[in-house]
Image 1: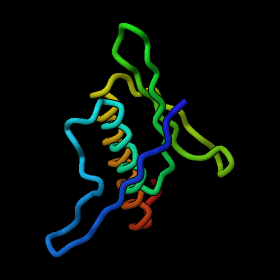
Image 2: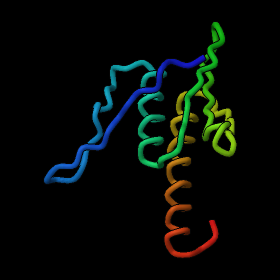
Image 3: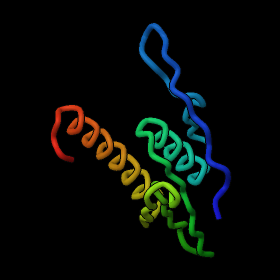
Length: 109
């Protein structure tokens, strides 16, 4: 089970853009990953859900689902611990951007 996804938005201003809510270093690891998941989903247009898998006495492991079952399929990924999950979400965003760029240039992804 997961909590409701966090909602983020990109706000444009004269100096560029920023994300609201701002990242807060005082959040716990799960909240930080919920923010990162929401940011990745926002920037890629993908439907991404974070699933923590806590085990008493051990670091929480995280997984995500990407996509929607009723819209062509859903993929589940086990991401590992906090830092591994953060890095994986970053790579999901990079991969989505690469696919968008390939399609924009008429290349097969």
